[in-house]
Length: 253
Image 1 (cartoon, rainbow, N blue to C red):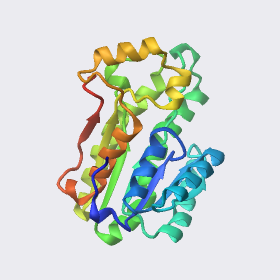
Image 2: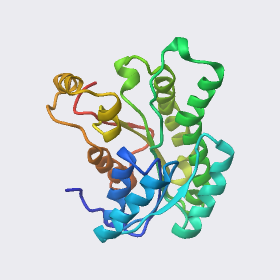
Image 3: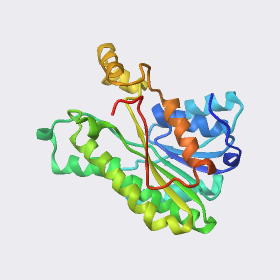
């Protein structure tokens, strides 16, 4: 069971990539805190299914907007529109990403730039868009999701791993730039999370057994584990934490 953070009640929270996987668990967690939650995704069907589930759950009901985050120029308009429903955002969880597999030989200039937009550029422009609200309110928490992939030297993820390594630099830079406005910026680093997508596309039963062998903790890492850390980083309980990496990986790195 997740801890309850009274200061998150009625806070305005934006989550990217919130329709499924880790993102959906983060949406669920903030709705359970009775925050005012907005989320962005490209999968409108999954988003509506999640909303229906949360209506039945009896907590806060999130607001959804379609947005292809690879279209960097569209981000600010979508976020400004969502703020009309949820209020000025004080929490941003930059969860959206795409870890499609590829070899270095397969990368073209066009696909390389697309991967950078999808996995790095949109995190910056989402942060830039919410900065105006946080600056006006003199408070905010931006949570950028990283990855253990580049530290583990995993194969077939060159562009993705490059972006996730760069997220750490983005976090530290923005934490310095915006700290005077009481805006905190941290990196949340998930380990090998057993989402439905990962289990369907990439991780076999044998792979999972090997992962747990490598972890210090011999258990599945699931989306709720990542969501629990996101709640902590969004709350005033972490008010002195910024420019840091918070790793939730069962001890795999």
